[in-house]
Image (cartoon, rainbow, N blue to C red; front, side, top):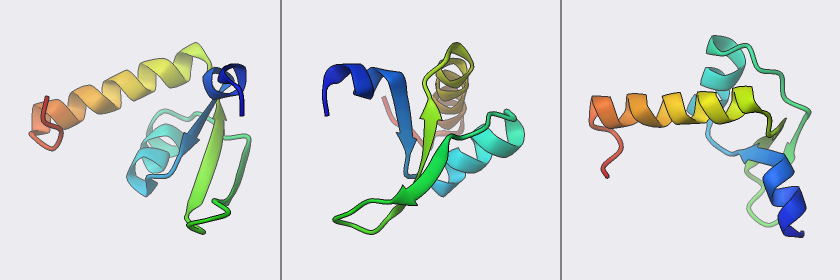
Length: 70
């Protein structure tokens, strides 16, 4: 996978983050699948400005709640 693909898409492996993006932020994912080595489910999102903003907000909420340490 080249850097263009890494920047174009966001792969979400967290059910909590997925719920935040899909349910709270109303952002649609492109597809879902299983990681071929871990068999962990992921959701693929087009990395648009709304996704970047939502990821920043999710991180800030985690910091504010003390779940994410910086």
